[in-house]
Image 1 (tube, rainbow, N blue to C red):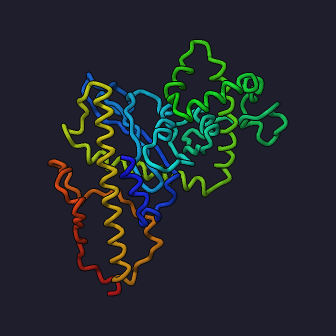
Image 2 (image 1 turned 180 degrees about the vertical axis):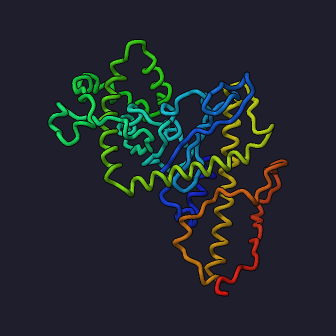
Image 3 (image 1 turned 30 degrees about the horizontal axis):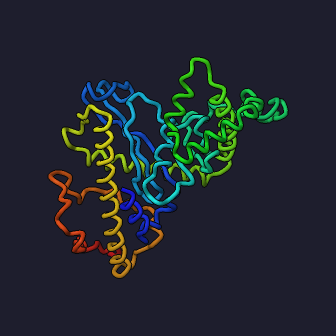
Length: 334
């Protein structure tokens, strides 16, 4: 999986789509049998589960995992970034509101990455400050309770050890966040982590208001993920697009296989888009290299989605390349 994504990122044409290190993630619902999934009213009356997938800024589909249909997505945001099989290190990560929590904001900061979610409920979220909100007269209507500095000081050492354990993969972020959040009485370490997250979220929200480029980059990153969902839905046509696997291991294998096929299609498309762009550069007076940034390698109209995948034909070893499907172009000058 990682080798395909790395090979895709190494293609010159992939550089038109931005930095690979600007990644995004989102969950996609798939219907399942009653013994395989849960019902989430948001997705209708049928049971199912979600595949939470990760995409690089250059359309490299580098990770996916299965989560429950009713599970919150926020605890799983860091899992894919820290178990990334490819060789690139994500620096900025985009999600929608479902992937947001103050604790995720905190861990992103502690791990040296930038979290840039699109907050649907932006106006309803309160800013945080040190001390009294009265010191910020203009912003006071937007400020909630002050930061609890004392709990951060008391547990700073524990927070550093937690971040180090997550960084060296001794702890899985989703598991530790769910365990800390499951205490009947709020865990003090969990509370301290949330306070750091409130600080980071406040700084992000202020930056979001002032920085139009940040908003555009976030929207663009999430739109790439939506395009991946469309391809995933088209590829996952087996058994009427339903997941019949009952065990967690089998479900995860199916998600990984789907991700592998998506990565292979993306890689193949990028290679041939480069050839097509080269042909247009030589033959079309309307060719503009700047427009290539607005293309996408996630199309599938030319891909045969039914039948068997032949992994042993030897075509790759023989380096057989299919010729371009060149059609007469329309004369826009007439």
